[in-house]
Length: 507
Image 1 (cartoon, rainbow, N blue to C red):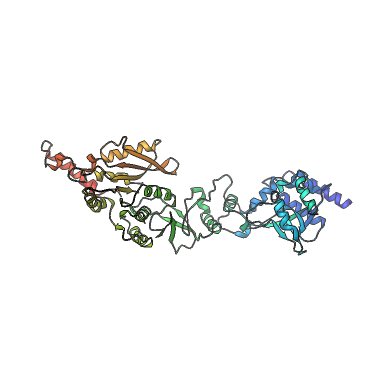
Image 2: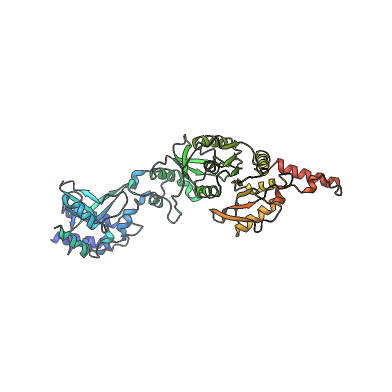
């Protein structure tokens, strides 16, 4: 008894030390508890009985928030790690438990589920290695009473099963596999810095957009994302904005298999295959794809000017629409053809590999003339322009695109996507569209928010029916009236400027 009192006094002194329980110390309460437990030698192995009264282990500190943090935080030594070392995440923690007979375990689990430990990846019932007929039920430290015991309702449950209410300290080893991706990255990155585990999933590929402060840890982050997400075998980081005419971005493989960038995805019950390193695909646009397609009816005609691999064209064809799909990128053109066959709509989609302006002035114009000349046309004409970085600049193609006079009141409906950093993005988009069309769209258009791309940057979609005065050349132009009143040099200069703009578009 004298020895126990001395040890008890020593332990109490440790509790009062200045650095105990602070971030400056690597000694956690469970670690000291473990040393104390080993000194007492109350039971062999890794278990010890905690008495219900007159015991240091019934102090409230035994179940304070430090224990919860120990269950959720890897070992402090992983802070600043840039090369993943899974073994470094191991740590020992202590949780309260009760020891019960095997044959009543299932019934007790149902009755005590509210006070049992709830931690993904951790077993709540552990076999006793020294007794096949016994089990340990692990408890939530925060569901214990202030004196370290179970509440009265739980005690009554145990009593009904003739189980002792004594609490057992269970020493448990947590490993890398027990921690979530966010917990791992919070433990690794410097304290106070933003941690994100968000990514876009493109088949087996995780597409991340890392911030500057995360770049020193990029390879570790990529591997953690792969480890903690089933089916992900490759993690890539976007390293520039989409500035090329082909709409694909440069990427860096952070972890995983970089030899296979060809992936397969499903969107709105349709399948798409493509090489993610060579084409554009954004799973965050699935709602917008569905919204536009839902505006179409069977037998409508859709002109998809910047079709990509087919997220508008293919579902439209599935609705029995007539589709003309174009993309400048040869890889997108190849995969668009492949996806049309994959989804069995290749007979309903005409595919083109052209510059957007050439497509609009060529195949699209020809089909518009044909469709607008029909006397009993019941279908609607839709033109989708999903190239948000520059599509709005292509609207000037519609000016005087057709000859003659309107033979139909049902003129084409345009859906043009664009980015805006304006404080009033809807107004900004409308004004820019009006400038390109040379007419007002007041009361004739609708502007939808597609998604927030970044702080102060929105993706918008403006939809409007093409005004006849924009689409058709004015009669004076058809009559061959020339502008002889203007100086010859000015007419030539205007013509050259216009030709230069149309022959060398910014793509």
